[in-house]
Length: 105
Image (cartoon, rainbow, N blue to C red; front, top):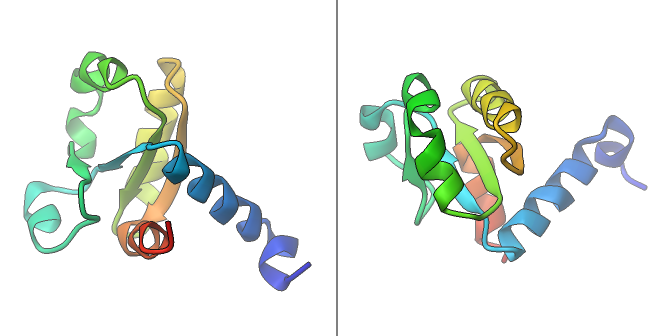
C-alpha cells in the first residue's frame, strides 16, 4: 500500500480508470475559452453554470460521467449536481490528471 492509498487518492485513481474502461463520458465544466486552450481528447464541454440545464442531455448519453475542470473545485460541484439527478458520476479533478489517466487506458 502506497502513500496515495493511505490518503485515499489511489482508490480514486483506480475508480476513474474503471470509469474510463467502461467508456465514461469526460465532462469538462470549465468555460469554453479554458476548454479551447486544452482538454482531454474526446471530452464534452458543458460549463458549470450550464450543467443543470443540460441534465436531460447528459442522462441520454446513458454512460457514467467523469467531471473535470482546472483544479477539481468546479468539477466537484458538477459531480454533486449530477449525483442529485441519479447520474453515475465521479469527480476526476483537474483535466490534466484525467488526461494522464486516459493515456494509460
